[in-house]
Image (cartoon, rainbow, N blue to C red; front, side):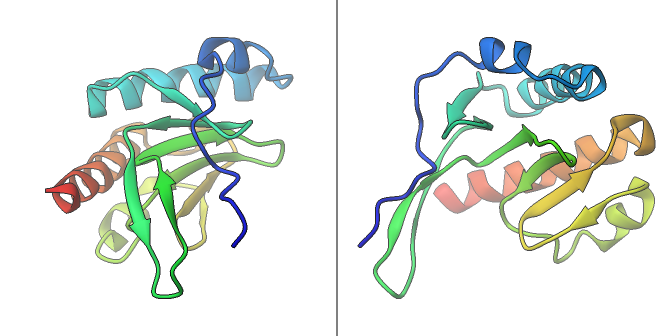
Length: 138
């Protein structure tokens, strides 16, 4: 079975974020970093080459594949800022309706710029997601 590429690397989070080319994406990443630190109460860690993650959880699929992933996190991708909402978006329709301009996939929230979303709503969405993942660990 192939090894999971998304693992803790021990790389420097601040160094990674300092290397983000797009000035707006870099500033948005610093804002999101501070927000996630406040929400989770945890220090960030690098997962793979480009994910800033907070906390971790273990997963196991019916197929036998298993691994660890961050409980929440983000990545300053070239196309958009990607926020990882690990339980997905079921039950968060109220927040998504108030969030502002965004797209979603299974567990990813794509935001072009933080100025285009309500940051209080974003913080609530991240907080709900993190609380759900924490409860799942118990």
